Amino acid sequence: MPSLLSIQNLSVQFSNEGNKTVAVKNSSLEIKKGEIVAIVGESGSGKSVTALSLMQLLSGNPTVSGKTLFFQQDRPPANLVNLAADRINDFRGRKIAMIFQEPMTSLNPVFTCGKQVVESIRQHQDISVKAARQKTIELFEKVKLPDPASIADRYPHQLSGGQKQRVMIAMAISSNPSLLIADEPTTALDVTVQKNILELIRELQLQNRMAVILITHDLGIVADIADKVVVMYKGEIVEQGPTKDVLKAPQHNYTRALLACRPAGKKKEQGCPW
Image (cartoon, rainbow, N blue to C red; front, side):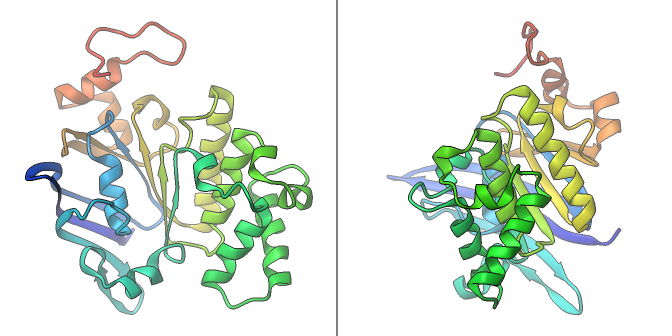
């Protein structure tokens, strides 16, 4: 498969009152079209910073170096790191979309779920409110929300956590992005709902032929969904490769420690890094 995104020697540094913190250091990885890549590591390992830097969504005036080349058909690749504000907006939502960890903080509590998706659609597509509303209902059906028309008229607080996350997924895929970034999309959900959301992401990835970056701290959930695993530790990529190879024969001690962590509901084993 051809490459969709090439991250080359990416480094991200934050400065605060003269103190400098390196969040990501010389990280490189390739994401191919239609591939699911899981970036795994504990909190603070740099995985979310890596993903947010792709869309220039980092706060705090960071210093970002290296290249993040996004390949486009019949056009030269775009280096997302140094794109001007007006150009990066062409990528956000339209070509690269993101699902965040906690849907309640991503949805506006004063607008209905349907209105928020309609606005997102119309921001990237030149269609009427009526057409966007119809597309929203179709998207809600696609992400398997019950009674999509009714859900569209409800406010976020009227939905369960899993339903809110499905609304966010519908919003994310509304403009058929080439790359979907899912940043800990199941952390705030119970185990059964987690499984359903991951299965939904996999199903939509196959239907829409999009690439997915799945950010997680749990190697256990990537076995059935990810094509490739990237392990980050203290801002650096310490191991990457096909999922089955990394899980079967991890080469780095940190990867082995992640695999030693308890499954849900069982006692944590010695060596787990959190």
